[in-house]
Image (cartoon, rainbow, N blue to C red):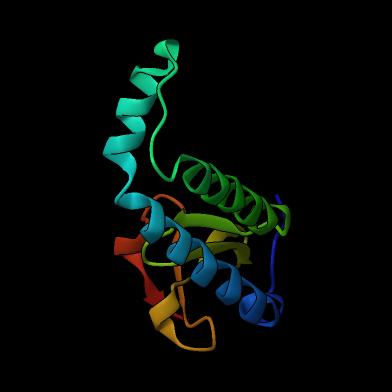
Length: 124
């Protein structure tokens, strides 16, 4: 697990923000197609399919690529709809998570204990 300083997390924010916006847009595009995709999958043995199926698959593939890019940087994607990410960091002698979401602005200003989750967010 990569550990970030606050400065390192803030340096990555522009890239993460861009990726999160793209992921959220892609998810919003495929969310309306979920029921059709389930029906197409169920009918796949009979040569099923769905209108826009290739677009749906391409969007899912792109979401996977973007998510992988985030994880390869050592950042944890927690919620694609809110654009919520965590950066593991040291606070004293324990590992905590620096917490940021798309509505938080241009700097990481929150942290929480690993066990506390988002509900336990505290200002840095």
